[in-house]
Length: 191
Image (tube, rainbow, N blue to C red; front, side, top):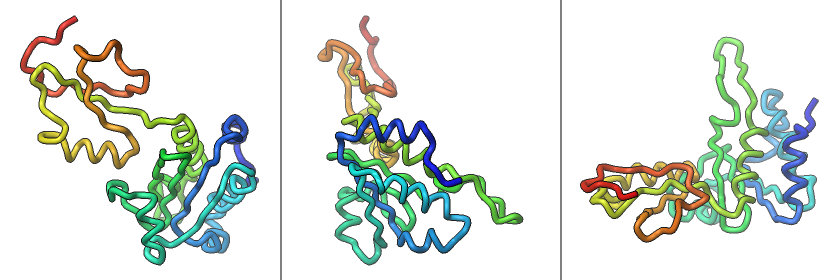
């Protein structure tokens, strides 16, 4: 009943040469004692059984140094029961409310999406770079740091890198570009 999906297993196997760290910001024992949380408990323990995956469980209020290591800029926020997946310098946060979704208060049930979220995070962090949102520059566009800082920080908090892109200086659109934002250009964009 609580086995890993074949897609997750294949993803972990493909990345067995990379050290992957998973941080669960609560005690694992609490998951095991709550029947509704057993799917997450088994996902985490099954992943921890792989040689290249290290699971660390801690309360961010009890260990603020470790919480700061996961979120040195404070953009992501570290709250109880969140999950962070790390490989090298790349870190992906999974909010607790993304693990159990569509909570039904009457029946006290929810849909478990934790394994899918963790597998997606593993895919992102083992890729070597975060997907990037580029803000086009060179045509009088509004700047990230002045007009769009709050939006850029929101993107960063959702594990995107945010960069500026001047097409006059770049030879091509970067391969890691997920989105190119063209924010109010004042002059024509050249071919």
